[in-house]
Length: 397
Image (cartoon, rainbow, N blue to C red; front, side, top):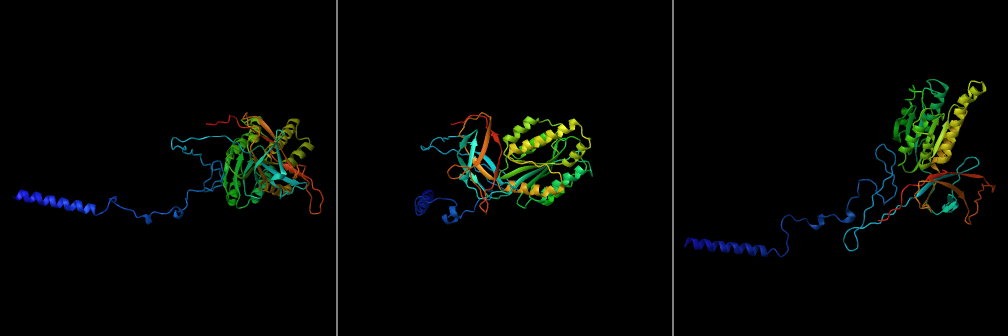
């Protein structure tokens, strides 16, 4: 009898438990429930703090600690197909060629106010359609490349003074928003200071130029090294070279150095030192024919590096010329017009293509520039003479 009573009691309890579950309603989730009001809305979510983002191929300047602005590229992500199946993608290689152009009058003053339609770019004589155009003053990223060896810059010598005067003088022209790195070279390049916006740090780095170690002056190696470091830097950039122009023992040949200069988008601004000493030694008969030829070749190399990169070379004879040189470099680097186009020649043969930039009016005629008095002003357009086309073929998947 007791077993029957116990079985009945269990049945009654099971029925009560089933009724209680049913009273909660259908579809009610079990476990921990997060109310909807605790879930943040899309517009209420905090912005990402991982840094600026960009579309595919867009260039963004970012500051990461004590480093120069870099190109940031977001990788392409293929979209899902319309049927919800496997993703598909079309990859088309489009090479935008960018050219920095400086337009100055016959006094070397920058000519502002030019429009996109005033520029005509010719690639191998063929007019190109401009896709991008930028104008206006902007900060610069510059490497100060200084020759410092025991062959010319001996401690307390005249060449040592010239080297330091030129180097310190240029650093003084930098602004707080500019980025600068300092590289000294003799047998090999040495980074005295990596990219920074701290002008005091630059002054301290130059203070290390006291006792040169080697007599070699491997300019081509140092220039190749510096250009390679600057290839991924965005914005206005350039290399200021304080040098005699002599190359003694570089592993990189002149031809290879020139190829690097032409393929890079970095203007070079050499400042030759020792011009007066050379002239005095030559006048006194203290310079032999071989030494004279070496210096003439050095001057020619500096001019070629500057012209083919869109820069300019200076050969000062007096200390008083340095301030004007520094001012001209600052104007040239900050006020360039940046032109961008996709070449009509789509072949990727790796060949060198000549560039020529002309100024035209709305009708395509040569642009006429006048001053405030209505007098016609002669002008000059400075830009790199060409570039090497990339190698490879356009790929469509």
